[in-house]
Length: 163
Image (cartoon, rainbow, N blue to C red):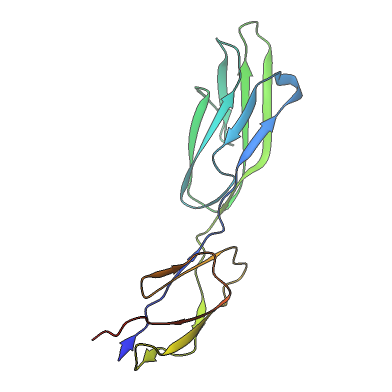
């Protein structure tokens, strides 16, 4: 008799951002991710700025002076704004004001059904059905076989007997 152990991976937390501002010339802002599962550290970076530029990052709690790259830990679900002010050597400024640039989501909890939970022969088959809301991608791991980006209903069986 073999018990079935299933691991279901859900991937629904990813995205990239690149922002431009008309007042900033060639400078632009990027982030590693825009849709994340918490907790997650996101890295923001300003590109193509003149030498001597200073940076003031604002993540909603006031300005924090920093370098052209800044990392922020998102530990709670929600939509987050990012504002950065660049000050050039001549005193002129450039402002990137990005609303809801990061969407932090709770880690999804997989839900599935299975047609049989105990198999008697190694070639017995069963069907797994993902019933998780808003699944973006399903990765099933059955008997050490990974079914990447698998279907909602997966028919599987064990390839070898076990004790």
